[in-house]
Length: 275
Image 1: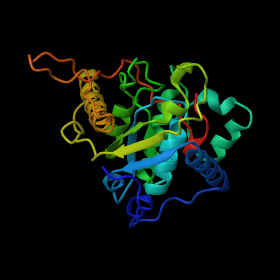
Image 2: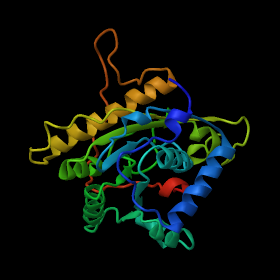
Image 3: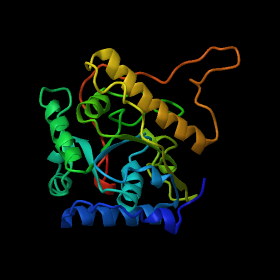
């Protein structure tokens, strides 16, 4: 697939994007600068973003630097994203007030208040905005950095809002900031990595919208979303996810949704630090 080009760098939208406050622009500018300095860009598939109305983006998560890369990509190629972010980040000095000023959505994980984040996200989608979610809710724990099990939050948000879910896969940020300190140092400045971000067509959930959101339905929706992300990641990495069917017919399917109902994302707006 082609690298970033003038055609994909600034995608024209027939509707105006939401107005951005100074805090959002500041975070986006800092995040974009960090991304450009840290590595090269390979951006793919921005034409898959819906041209009208709000939408959800579901993104894999391999590094604390992911939000810088994906946030900058989304900011330049579509609607500026509003992330679902764990509430603990909002209580930190400096970054907390900045996240609030930038309109990000706090999630009280493992509490009754977690549903409030879904309500806020649904309102944002109805207002024509983009809501970005890391379905796993945290960095993947898979040793080979394939997407792990999705929490049910992204499935709940998709089914309750009816908004399109656009799968996004990214790769390369882990070479700059290794997950959980892999490889020793927290930051590797050399060799300079290439940050790949690939967007796929919206996941087809049309047959699930009118069904009761039972555990089985949420499982099915989450599995479809995860499978779509994995397919994009296979193309980026040039290798097959080990869960794909083998020649003898045995396989391990894309991992299902987890049992919790909170929608989480340990990312931040257009490049603010995560984790």
